[in-house]
Structures are given as structure tokens and as C-alpha cells.
Length: 367
Ligand SMILES: [Mg+2]
Image (cartoon, helix red, strand yellow):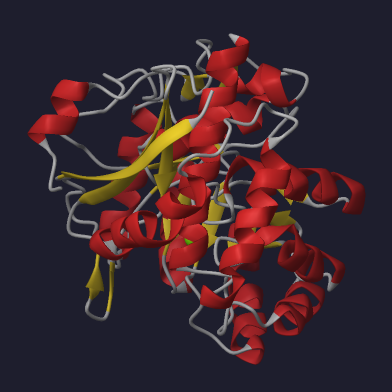
């Protein structure tokens, strides 16, 4: 069976997050922009992948068309054992265009689609293809967008708990925000604090001390720049809190550097950024070896969320990240929404388990 084509689909679904938003300067997420990667074959089977796109969907789609499709067209479709070698060759072929960022997002999209195809060919769900299944459903945490005002944070936390979520993540940078959330959710609900890289190591150590009494499960990416692993390690040593990072790291090689530097207690590979299922699985294996927890980055709703559920099904613990917002349509017809207990069922069909709804794709298609 040969790959006949690789095509990017830009889908844009609006969302409503109430008082919350995501904005870093001019870089705002104004809708859920997704780039789905469709790999077609001469046997009529299709695999679906997902490449990170937030504010760069046209750029990511161009990378698929211009860099990825020519690498993959005409290749024999690899089985599960063959995918890592195919993907390493493509990483080698494209390494001079960047080891993190658009190139790796596009590579991730192809990789996920190849795993979907391999699962479909073998007739088993992705989680069974790559390991031993340990969980049929995954507890989700509500990942709140940035809110700012402590009173609004408290209200949004209560709303998330009322929906069934058993854990919460803030995207905030003040101690007042952290304490407002803790007060709203009580002492027992895990509370994660994602800062998105604003501070020096010294400032981050002070912030950690300030927040300690609110008992965050971890501080996520407190330090600028994100690749300052020595700085993160210092914050972890002196701040007295666990540290999470990894959504801005790439491949098992850089995760190895980060984890061996002692930078993180929790590693956060993002399957649509890090190099796909192949790199994620390698990172999870290395994290287990080094005693680091895996808490994936997955604030997205395309095939990447499905892939994340499969990868978490192989682990005894670990939450799945779900963006806390309302959206008018879902590619999976609501089947990956958290239930009243705050859990998401792991898809059990072949490959990723579900096919994107063609009607939703057409209605929200940009290109
Ligand atoms: Mg984050």
C-alpha cells in the first residue's frame, strides 16, 4: 500500500470562553484554528493527523504542502514497527528548517496520520498498537484561559467543578489569582498554575515562595526563555514547588536534556508539536526511566486530542488537558467531551478510533 497524497485542511471553529481569553501581545487565539493532515493511500484507506496551528494555521498548512507532502508521497505505508524509521528519515531530511516550531508541527501531523493508518490496517486502536492498555477512560482537567481578576477566576473554577472536572489549571501570573482559585475549589482539588514563561529564575523562586501556601500541584513554565533548563532546575530546587514544562521542547533528545538537568518534575510533551506519537512515546519511556511524571500538553480538539487519550491509556495515571470553553461544533460529535465525572473515554475503534465529521469539516473549513 502506497501513500498517494498528504493534504492539509484548515478548520476554524469559534469559541466562547466568557471572561477568559488568550492573548500574548498581538498573538491572540481568536478561534480554534486547526490544521488536520489527511494521508490518502492507493488502497482507499485514509489516516488523520494534526499539526499545531493556534495563530499560524496558514503557515502550518503551507509547511504540510511544501515540506511534508513531497517527503511522503509515493512511500510504502509503514506498519507500527516501520513508522519510527520513516519519521527519523524525514526529520533528517528537514532538520535545517528548524528542530522546534513549524517544521516539527508539520512532521507531528504526518506522524499521527501514519499511526492512525497503521492502526486501521492492523484493525486495532492506537493504544493497543503501541503498548499495554491500562485505562479505558482518562480524568480530564479544566484548563482555564487567562482571566486576570481574582473574583472571575473563583467563579470560573466553580463552573468547571460543577461540570465534573476534578482538577484545574490556571493560566495566571499573580499570587492573588492562585489563592482565589484555591479558596474557590477547596483544599483537595489539584490546582496547576501555568505562567507561560514570564519570569527570571530569581523572580520565579520568589513567586513560588509566595504561592506555596496555596499548594499548587506544579508551576508550569515560570521562566523565560523556555529552553533555560538550568534556570528551571534552580527554581525547582529553591522554590519548593514542583515544576512542569515541555510544550515548547522538541523531540526525545531535548526532553532528555531538560529532564537530566533536573528542570522538571512533570514533563509535558504535546503530541502535535513534539514530533507526533513516535516522539511522545519515546519521551514517556525516558520519563519513566528518569522518574519524571508525564502530564501532556493538549489544549486542542483535533486528532491530537484523540492521540493524547490513546497515549495516556498506556499509563497508570496522568490527566488529560481540556481547554475550558464552549464551542458550537465538534469534529467528533461530542465523544471526547468530559463526562459528569470529569473523565473522557479512550476511543476503541481502529487507529485514532473516530473519523472527523465531514459535515463539521465543510461547515468550518477555511481551506
Ligand atoms: Mg502551558
